[in-house]
Length: 384
Image (tube, rainbow, N blue to C red; front, side):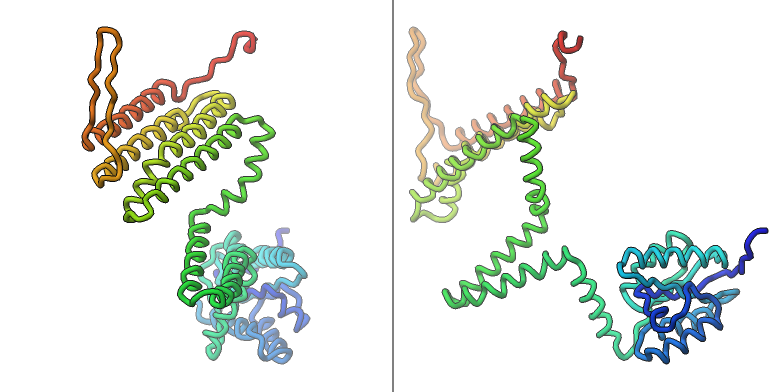
C-alpha cells in the first residue's frame, strides 16, 4: 500500500536555520499540524521569551488562518555544528514534509536574513508563493542593521575589500598629518582610495592574481611571448625615459606642451613595445593553434598605425607652438637623378603621418582577411 498523504493546498513552513527551537524545547523536527505548533509556541515562549522565533511561529499560525482553502503549518530547523550540515538537515526535513503532505505550494516564514538563505533550497523542491519575514516592531531598524552588519562581517571577501583598506587609511592619515599639512594628507588619502577603487572596479586584482600562474605556464611551455614581453617591457621603459627627458627639457613650458612632448618622444618606443609583444603572441598562436585568428594577425598593424597617428598629431602641435622644427628631407643625388630636398608644412606633415597610419591599418586588415582562420600546414614528414 502506498503511504498515507495528508493533502493540503498550501503548507506554511516556519524556518529556523540556527536550530534554536529544538535546542530550547526538545521538540522533534520536522513538526507539522496546528496543535503541535501552538504547543511549541508555548514551550519556546516559556524557555526564552525574547527569542524572535516565537514571533515567527505565531506569524505562521496567522498566515495559515488567513489563507483561503485548506492550509497547514509546519516547522523545520537545522541543528548542526556547521552551516552546510544544518542546511542539508533542513532540506531533508522539507522533503519529508512534501512526502507526507503533498502541497501544491508553500509560504515560507522567517525571522532573520540568515534564515532567508534557505529560501532557494525550498524553492528548488516546491513552488514558493511568498516569503514572510517577521521583525519585531520595536527593534525593526536595529535588527535590520544588525543582520546586515553580521552578514557583511561574515563575508571574508567583503572584509578584505572594505575593512582592510579602511584600517590602513585610518592608520596612515594621522601620520601624514603629523608630517605634512591636513590638505596634503587628505589629497594623498583621496588619491590612494581612488586608485584602489579603480584597481577593484577594473578587475586588475583578478589579473594580478592570475599573473603568477600565467607566467609559470608560459615558462614551462616554452612560449616565445615570454622573450618578446621582456623586450616590450624594456622598450616601454625606454619610451617612458625618453618622454620624461622631453618633459624635463621643457620644464618652464605649459602642461599641454609637456604632455605633447612626452607623447612625441615616447610613443615611437611604446609602439615598438606593443609591436614586440603582439608579434610574440602571434608566434605563440601560430605554434599552438591549428588556425590563426584574425585578431592576432591584425594587432601588430593596429599598434603601428596608432603610433603613426599619435606621432603625427603630437608633432603638429609642437611645431605649431614653436617647440619643434619643421620636417625636411635633405637633397640627394644619385647619378643622373637629383632630389633638391623638401620641407613639409605642419599640415602636410600631419597628413603624411595620418595617411601612413591609415595605410598600415588597411594592410593589416587585408592580411587578417587573407590569412585569418587558415590552418597551419605541417611538413609532410610530420604528417606521415
